[in-house]
Length: 528
Image (tube, rainbow, N blue to C red; front, side, top):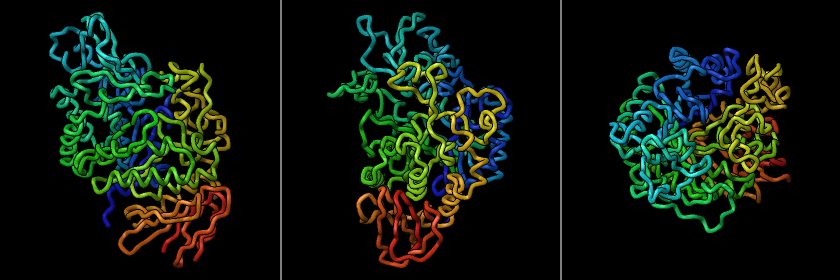
């Protein structure tokens, strides 16, 4: 069958500040990524999603954009970016940009104009309000602390910011804003970008009446933002109209991909909301379901999440799957307590589901959360809520390339401390070890790419002994069976047919079997 890169391939997320420093200033950059495209090609990657590299004052490390059509000097130049595109194309790797469309930097020229006077032509490009009885317009809270409204003494009105006060929210009800942002998409598409990841895409449109958000009955989270049910500051129906128009633009460019970030209220798991942003296969191409990120290492829980996700999507679009990203604790630490045996099982689960798998940089070598003292914290969220929330830096530590000082990431002290295990956990060592995590990922991705049932087939969950997840992947007359033992006990699964063992996390030799004997926390892939 004809492979579609974003549908049948494997996507790899890079946090550019932390991947590879090419000019020895302690910060990762574009040339550092370009110089390691061969590594990504050998791993089997089809697309690379870059966290923001636009010009930014870096109050939120690039998620506060001051120029959407320029590269920030800390990452390089537009010439460097075009070289990245060219070299990636040679290796059949698509470049995916991170689009921050809900808000800009407070230093963006649009906002500087908007706040200059109430009658400025760009005043309505952002969300302003005079307040009610000299108080904030409503009870909306910012994700990074405090109220979501900031008083601006220059024009004596409040502006909305659902994140930091340096990130004012755009007014997507203004058609001129939409036109300007669509032009940004065209700019990058014309420069060879093949896809976009959309930051907090469900926040674009807010309630016209600015109604108060209701509060939860149980207020267990000290962050007031998380105590609210976000009924009026997100998930408005007009967002779907915007995404439909966006999809028309993407389709006009050919084989382009879009993937959305849609977080639910704290403690809520409803796959129908993220699935709704796929429309009837006429909005986003993909959307993350973060229920897997907030799950525990439990067979029943993970199976329920996956089944519910498939049911919510139905025929409206294509699923995708993720266990780690730049905003959350790494799965190997969060779910597995740094257990590499279980991490191989989780890799099999990720790369054999129906849908597009997303790997977070370093996941393929078993990188764990960094232990970062408060004095080294860079993340504004960590600085605000320490020690309740120690921030996101722990998942953003420098990539561990080798056992030299600073893990081969840089020749100078990096912007974040390197993990203490870098002398044992790094790319160079794992390339030399046959049973390493990296070698297992490479074998697993090769296997996925060579079996249509695994990269394109349907999925059917089957009955299995307790704490075993068993499913069949089928494409036409080709079938694969995947069995995962989430327990510390030996389990047996009857195949009902002769199966050929293709891959095991225990490095078993390929053989024909009628019964699959699973060792503790073993995962196997068989063909029928």
